[in-house]
Length: 432
Image 1 (cartoon, rainbow, N blue to C red):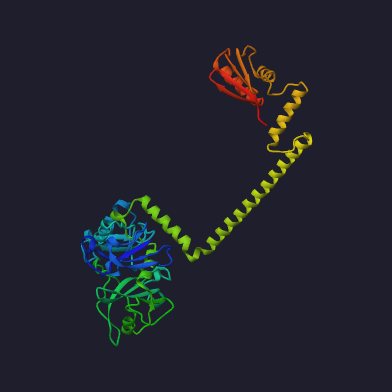
Image 2 (spheres, rainbow, N blue to C red; image 1 turned 135 degrees about the horizontal axis):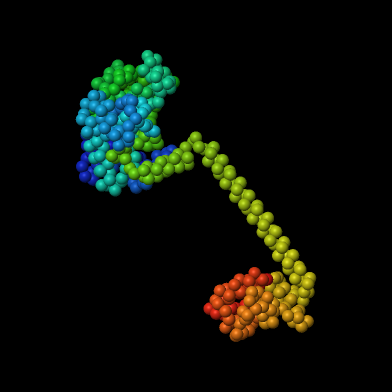
């Protein structure tokens, strides 16, 4: 999985093949195996490319969407968000939260469509088509029922602070159950914040979100290593270091996909992505480790069991072969070397019958008697007979062709080897 993100926030990507992107590459969904920054044409090849949008490029809006057909959902969102946005709704791209459907209260992400399409086209021209679009930060799920999210006790709600650098400015992106906010940081003795930005590109606004500096069990403070020291001096709080590649990987593993509506892929492509994502999670996620071990143990038991059954069958077959060989040598003591016991026994039996003057199945008389016994019509007789090497070629049959076919089937049921060639029937004794 290849994850890319624009290194700087802008209204449009760089033109042509000079587009710069930060990228991270993961083979198992758990660890980043390589990362860097380069033009789009020099990106590594991978079956799945995920585009991560910077926090300031997306605004978030909590709305109740009425039940409408999918074809009319975009127009309904335009009406619901028109008064909340600073930009023209026709210039924006919308995306619903994972598993979000009309008739629910859910989060809607909005961003500049021209900006997003520009990046998608740039990567497409570079031969790196995007399979998913995810945000770098999104509203968190509340720890209490949704009806209590707006309660005064906001300190019990999960809050995630992420300090990062963009456009030569250090930003503090804050996510909570009431939205996402981006605040520029200025290093000083006291915590000083500039004017907050909530989805600047999309022109959105959001409910006020107070920055709770005291640490709590539900608050996480994360920072890019390059800006951690500055952020700690600015806020007077300790941050946990998270590298940009690791952050991109966590974003790519989320369930979000902003490529919806006119930017969405075909249902078959989405199903294929979902299967690959679920397979990757099952293969590498720690929560499925027990299931993987269980499946491995089951396969090992099955393999051992199959080998045990095969070993037992081989032993049983060898015992039968030894028994047949012993029967041959006990019946015909002159046979000292056993190569194919059934064939050798048939040969010895034929010689014994000939020496005693009795007919064997390889004799012409026995074969003609077998034809007479199998013929349904006594008038079904051959007019030419050629006998050679215990095989009879009977031709010139009287009667319709289906009569010969019926005779051949009857002979096969009686244990003879039969082959029909045109109007001739080849007959010989069945092999042991």
